[in-house]
Amino acid sequence: MKNLRNSVRLIGRLGDDPKVNKFANEKQVVTFSIATDESYKKDGEKVEDTQWHNVEVWNGLSKVAENYLKKGQEVAVEGRLVHESYEKDGETRYYTKVVLNDILLLGKKEN
Image 1: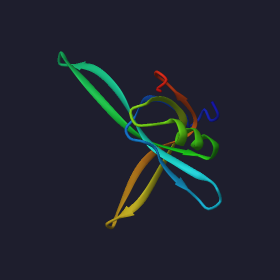
Image 2: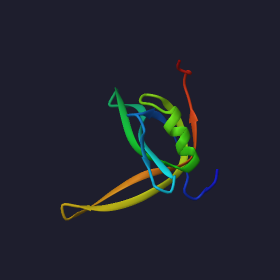
Image 3: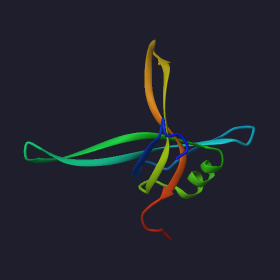
Image 4: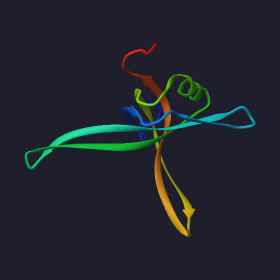
């Protein structure tokens, strides 16, 4: 682990194909979301809870994401949490993303 003070590991499935944004200086960022699932019992009933996580991948690791990830694929990711804000319609909006240090492709190899 690169940063023990701000580190997160998740296993989930991609909600959509990754989006690639290339820059003039040959850098690129790839973004995607992954869904993590949890099930538990509440009042005797099984409850399924899905959480969505925004993920951002830069530089060399972004090439792996661009070339090998696709919607529905199961992955394990490790990175750091980043909280950001932006203005929309006069309101400040907040969001959290995971900036990756590592990706592990899980599941069966596809043709």
